[in-house]
Image (cartoon, rainbow, N blue to C red; front, side, top):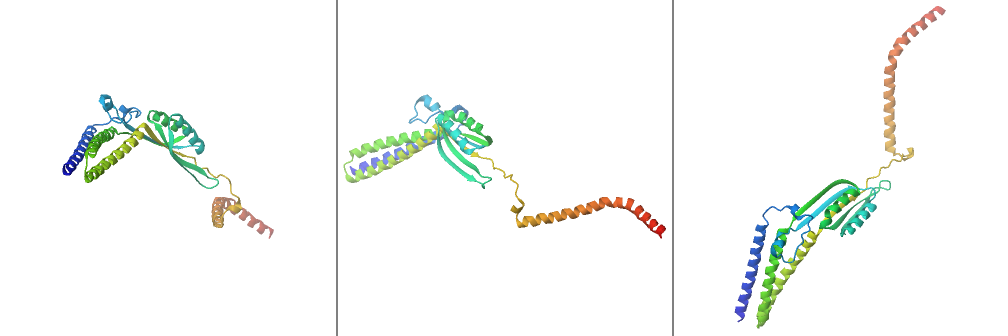
Length: 282
């Protein structure tokens, strides 16, 4: 009796694994065709617990993401405005970071805010984010995960059927060793079911709520205050003085070059006239 029950448990496990792999392969084949994200609209198709009927098979599960990098006059004000808008649209803040950089005169704030927005409001939220400041760059992405959803649902269905059959054998087992063996197998199947349900729940969240990552940065202030002469460093002062000497010498040479023709034209006659006057006096 014990050997027969153990054999049946092994057959049930093999049947469940074979059914899961076969269903997963069928799902992959069905997902080989081109996926058109436009058919999914704003990604409103939700991940159902178990697909059934033609309407469920025709739904598309779409994950939408967007990244916007903008420059804003005031980081805190821009973040507050966007957060208020996203919350009115049914979204929430998933993550937020900020840092202040620069010296006292050039201090400014940069940061990043990750919003989760209902998929049907993704386009409106994206447009609102772009209007908040000057867009430096932006990018959006749409990913069709319909095949993954179908695969998870099929694998869960097979594992639950395997769990039910294993439970029946567990209830019928009388020998202690049989009970332990079947119980261990039942726990393994239940653990696999919980892992797949967690993956499906995470996928459901990604489909239902689009991810919008917003990077905000303030412009770097410029320090236009003139410095006093005593604020200049020693090395800079010496270099400035040396540069001044070079400029003065060059100006002297250039001025002499300009004046030389006039000296020749008017100076030589004057020198000659002076010499004649000295002779006449003598």
